[in-house]
Length: 157
Image (cartoon, rainbow, N blue to C red; front, side):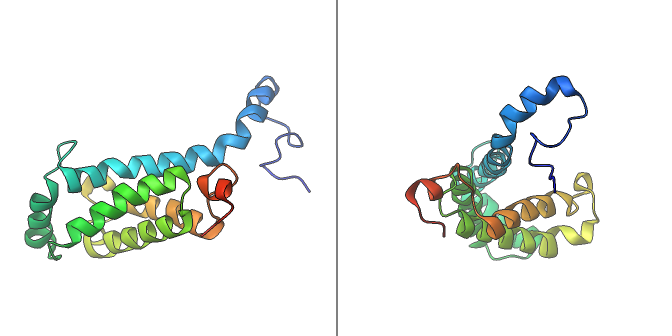
């Protein structure tokens, strides 16, 4: 039985790309994990530190209370999950735990904030947080993989 992941067995659509496909396939999952984590970090930096046009803890907490009906303290919790959870996911450190917190946060974001706005992110819908939640959930299920701190230290939590 052949699988998509075993590029040496499957025939590429464009045979000239086989060397590139074979060279990059071992890094594809690493790329997705690192990108997922790193793309979350700036959102946490906005909430925690006021970077990238964010409002910091006070401003984000006020927004959560007045606009979303959430406790202001959630700004700290969500900022920590996005920033440090994203960092841990990118590094592959305590991956299942970090990804679990990210998944949980995204479930809350979808249900409490974005669901009423429909699907499309351009209308404030749930498309974007659902995507990030599903990506994180995949790392809860399977862990960080061989190219991670978890694998390096021999402990997969």
